Image (tube, rainbow, N blue to C red; front, side, top):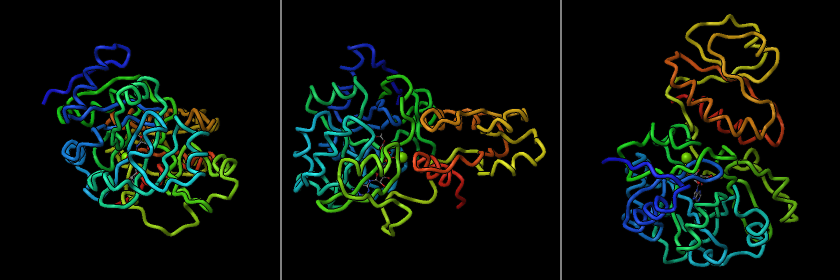
Length: 322
Ligand code: TXA
Ligand code: MG
């Protein structure tokens, strides 16, 4: 299949994307976190195509994206009041709420689970498209299974060209890592996937503490050890390990410390030491190093702290071995 390249800045292209989605085709769409591979969430046949295009196992649930809080009740039931508080505080934005699924929602979307992940993404064009057309899309990150998530249309193209109907180019993603996923009821909540929003930011709204991933045992389908991987083998190294190592011509380095920047490795990519900018540039930097025909990518261990949890999580999974 020929994958059409559409622009989110051109109204006719947005209408084309909408038409394709409504006719059961797959369109990669921009969100603030990463690009999503979208199918009409009310069409199980279309949603099945998402699993096929990504080569994703059928029991890995998808997140449903809506354009308006008013659409929430079409997809979830028994929604706790605190979920509305969080939605009002953080939507549109990088927060996915896990709620009890509406009985009409196809199990194809939720990987057979009785819960559903749902969010309003913060990309103006996508939001308008969803809200104005009362459309909901099931959309995982727009990459082949276990590979790097894309933060630009070009990166989507490198992984899925020829396998999907279209890519709607809405520019580079402004945030850069996938949404924070939170399971919630009236009395407590736990983060099942760390993301750009921290437990501290969320608990300012819930008024009860939020349990972080390190301290719970629950297995989430789709939350695998191996994930977010470049094709080139990736290793995490401490600043000191990198300082004392000799530069090798077939190793790529992703570094942020001044000491390492000064070392001037042959294949070094410098990344910001500020967490927001680091998050924004992380996948793009790894895609770039991945294209350089290197033997390994050595990533300087990022700083500690709550704002870096999601970055550590993604890099650890990127470095995981079979
Ligand atoms: O920022 C994001 O969340 C991006 C953009 C496109 O919205 N999406 C994304 O989707 O990262 P995906 O499929 O790559 O990761 C979603 C993860 C799944 O791996 C699964 O662990 C979890 O969300 N998930 C979704 N629905 C769930 C459910 N009902 N129960 C438990 N986990 C769920
Ligand atoms: Mg993904």
